[in-house]
Image (cartoon, rainbow, N blue to C red; front, side, top):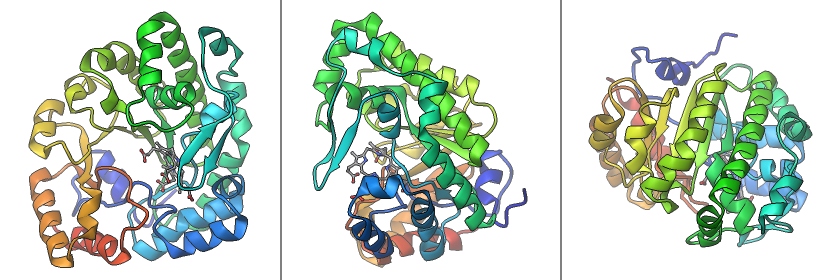
Length: 342
Ligand code: CP3
């Protein structure tokens, strides 16, 4: 394989590069009119998810339109709970809603686990194969999974939540069984990521979107162990861990065998660098709302971010790009990074 633009991979490999690479979390979908056109033609999000050819098309749209340095496969973190036996629907303007949840300890044993569960997600692997072919090695392709805690949070809660208190209650009331549930999710997600790698993804990013809901004690006791297993067992490609809001766990994450650490916008670059040490690549962390500002303001703040991180940096937002973000803001952000020279 020889990629035409391998800046993202060279950066993750710790090599000296000419400028930081840039991509945006949630760049596939949401912000592009081309995406919304395809999605409304199909009738919904899940229809698009289950259609590998169109999933490949919307994966490549931001590469064409925004000129980012990496593509991320169009999919969702909730495919794993579904493969494990918990179906959900995506409710317009509300988000995911599960038909069944982990409501009591006995529900854990009913889940499908590991390789056989992961193999059900053949439509994702097919989308990856088509994307790789159609991308024609222009940029690397990122595959992703939700982290064990974030997936458990949806599996117990059954929907989004401001606090995920139901899922946290389960952790406090049933610590042993929660650990068994987390083990099962981890086993499944490792099998899933390995199949994604086999299908062609060049990097894996793990989204722990609800890490900030947990106390440092709980995160370190339950979750670092799962993340460690993921980093130990997935050795084929570089891994980026994005634990949103988990600045308190950076010291523990320092010990994990991953190449990249994603940061949200609440974390200062210098603080993160001091906690994580000199080796790992930091990814982030502009406030997604910066992209609503005047272009001149976007330019200035982006330059400040670039100098605050220095080298060993992948530019991104501190969370996914919001659906109504103006394209001019997105493009100004990306252009500012691309004009930067170390
Ligand atoms: O990054 C990308 O562009 C690739 C595609 C991607 C989607 N979801 C597509 C999607 C990725 C990486 C995800 C990850 C994801 N999904 C996360 C982790 C990242 C994060 O934002 O914290 C989470 C928590 C989910 C769960 C999820 N999926 C929710 C809560 C929702 C509804 C709210 C929302 O974000 O729109 C989704 C739906 C979803 N996933 C959409 C897309 C494009 C919107 C559906 C639509 O209306 O088309």
